[in-house]
Length: 257
Image 1 (tube, rainbow, N blue to C red):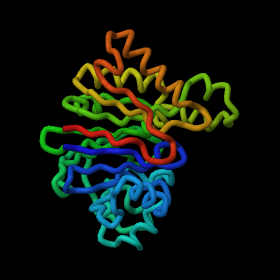
Image 2 (tube, helix red, strand yellow):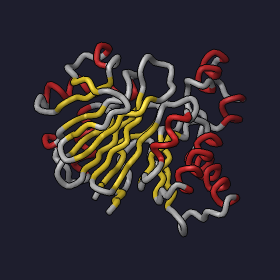
Image 3 (tube, rainbow, N blue to C red):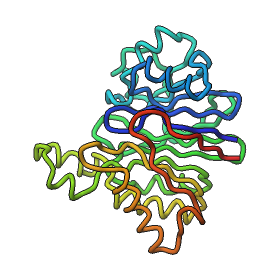
């Protein structure tokens, strides 16, 4: 069994909780320790029981709360790929990308993602026969990611921006180019193509996350992915479940069993 929910999912801050009933982990902590603790408490989870925090990369919207968390919960392990830990103000244990490793009763694999930082990863997390894949902060979907879609039950994937809203929005041109580059963020159409691939590989639950407040809306993200799926004979709500993670505040529980 895997139980999963996001605590925040946007360009302003990202954090998610996952448990198999024994091991309890966070993926990133880009919100304050106070916010994460409050959201966990609302879910009936004791923040003091978090075993590990998996860190994807060193940008502030993914690591903002780490230093305070380490002071309050020194027993929590911080796990980060080589090349990330030295940018953080906390002590981390180094993990290798592409190599499965145990985190308590879970098996975790860090997968490189193309983003504008030295090192960035997504995480494939397995409990028995159940698999979750979390990938955000990628300018495009690299070929190396597709094999990791096989066997995934629940997919959290970035749907950061709508191309037209970005193109005609108020951002400076250099920032627009950065976001739309192959090492920036994932657009709604590119997200939809990856979701289709995942669903065709057997994924039954898809959660769209890391939406930009300025360059996207939950409705745009959902409708873009929904359209691509239905055009290819997949009916959300019948063949699979499609949802959008809240930008702030915790999502509903998602359970794979």
